[in-house]
Length: 234
View (cartoon, rainbow, N blue to C red):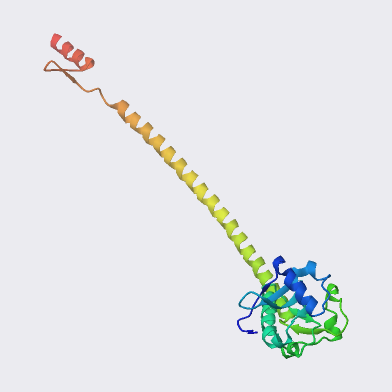
């Protein structure tokens, strides 16, 4: 069989019969695994046939690789790199720090998996402690460095929030000042308009009524006519 162009993906419910068949052929008890089929990554050939599978359980910052299933051992060298690519992809997407396994193939040790020390095992999640035998561990990231980065990021967010809150407070102060100035200007405009109107009315009241022209002659105001008539009588 040609094992070129293999592809890894997450198992679906449609893969359960093929997974059961592979577990049966490799002597792996499947009763406990079938309900957990979503933990498995399957490796398929270009025609869509399943050639291998591996379980990957995620818990917090830890992942456990388990139940490596390769019915055709002749394909192991081609299949395992694809398996590891899938493990790394899941680890990167989920912020995994440590990958644990009890798989014993030399391939995994070549990928810098090493026997876990007593200090390492103190970090092994309790739900993973289901099998006998030694544990291998691959540390993908410096956990202390990640913690420091997370703390610095949290501090940055706090400082940024405080800066934005300060800008909002300043904005409210300037808005209040602008409103006060606008109201003051409006009052001055209204007062000025009222004073101008009153001044105009006073000047108009002091002016003498103008003469009117009636039928081609100029009609003088009554007071002026009376004065002239008195002068003529004298």
